Length: 304
Length: 240
Ligand SMILES: Nc1ncnc2c1ncn2[C@@H]1O[C@H](COP(=O)(O)OP(=O)(O)OP(=O)(O)O)[C@@H](O)[C@H]1O
Ligand SMILES: [Mg+2]
Image 1 (cartoon, protein in one colour):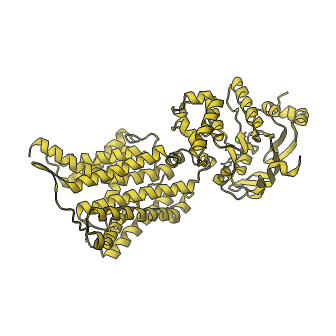
Image 2 (cartoon, helix red, strand yellow; image 1 turned 90 degrees about the vertical axis):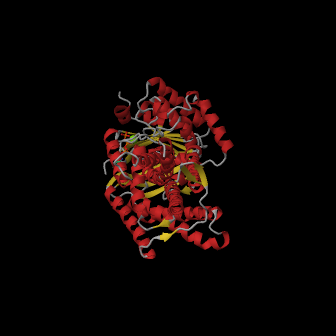
Image 3 (cartoon, helix red, strand yellow; image 1 turned 45 degrees about the horizontal axis):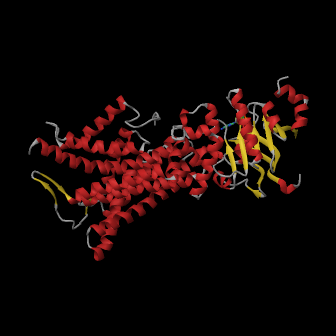
């Protein structure tokens, strides 16, 4: 392979991983922005999203097969279901803790994370689940570089979701209320904003984006496992911090950057792909030393 | 004044921060078309009274009636929907967002986009400086401009009662006059106002009726003419 081919191939790989990271990082950053909570259960919502998508796909594949239509349907339904799950978690587990000391709510988030991952583990007996699709293996062939239509579709869907989110947050009154809550909750109440409802909406959107990424990951890897939320949770957190936690464009940028850096990092001589995680967390540490607020972050990050 | 002319009434209201009682036994009234002022030294409980009315610090005892409805147990956003608008101490504008976005948020309870545009045009008409800078970050505004934005934001819905907490705080004398003119203009337009002021001179000029708070209790009340002549008030607040 020529250098150019390698660059192109890693660009494609990096964009795909970056899209997953970005989608999950968005939920992290939105929840942090609005209630200053690092929602450690967020990666598990991605995992649950994958499994819910799988269940729905199995249920409707009799009618629709495992085509694009069926996958899009399962993705949308999984987004709705997991979005709702996120809202319930917020209502039941986090809202009562909002006035408690910061550490209590972090521990609550860890507990929710364990409940979700252990719950799915016991249901699936800890086995891998094959996520079958019949999307075929066609794609764009550039000689040595091959990009499947599946990969292309995943990147496009992720971009569409991010565009819709960006539009919602910046162009609608509800989106602006979401930004305003991050600035001053009491002032928002005085504008007639039902703050609890907007917080619930934020959890819904963040969770459903994670679910979308989970279903996409199922399609991309062809299998699901209860532990898949753990590493992506850490990566998405890293991406959110790199971009500047609390910043929505920051999460998109951080996710894509992390995906690309990992992809190209594996090409450095003597650094194999098994060093990928070391590479990305090393980067996180370096960035935190150089610019603690992240690339697009404005406010100082509180110490946890 | 007849009873059904009363817009807002507090009956023996009490309010706490944790275990500390900040208000005791507060009873007061705002009638239709009136400007009523709350005076008092630092820490007397003026802001707390307004926060209790708008629901930010819920009353722990007593009753608050607005437009013949008991709002004591209502959430702040429900109270705003009824047309009771509170411009808080320190302006509390959304820094980092533009002036136009701040105003849009002020109209959050409006469903009709045309009405929103109309109200915004009206606010820009009163505060031309806000129109000029509508796409700028509101954090860049001066103190006086921030106060105008805070008041403009409150006028994005049609308020049926305005609570103003120290609108003249930290402003140069000519700006205090400007803000006073605007308060009068709003009131002439039919909006009753409950005004908290440190600047008693200003407040007693504007208002019809006044209450003086001291450590969470009302100690003096009356029409502003009588208050202006009250010796203890002249001594304590008018600096003569
Ligand atoms: N968030 C709070 N927590 C605890 N106590 C508070 C809080 N806010 C105010 N207080 C206390 O309640 C009392 C009344 O305060 P308030 O802010 O209502 O006074 P104020 O009359 O508005 O004073 P100022 O003229 O300084 O604005 C004070 O003793 C104050 O220390
Ligand atoms: Mg005050």
